[in-house]
Image (cartoon, rainbow, N blue to C red; front, side):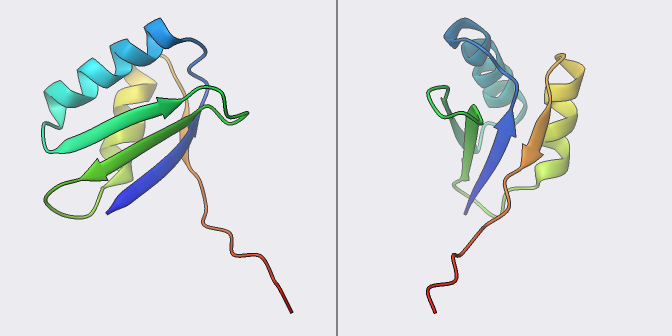
Length: 78
């Protein structure tokens, strides 16, 4: 399962710090940032089970960042 978050992580160095901390606390997650996206996307993929967004958002808050789950949006094509 994949969970996508919007963040306020602003550069690659900060993103690498967040990734390292996440891999330390959540070794069963694969994480990556898309800082080119206007929402500074954080993608988290679980190799074991569903991604629990609560602990991820708390860790980022402790590190001084914001993270919010990006809602799925399926456009109305009708």
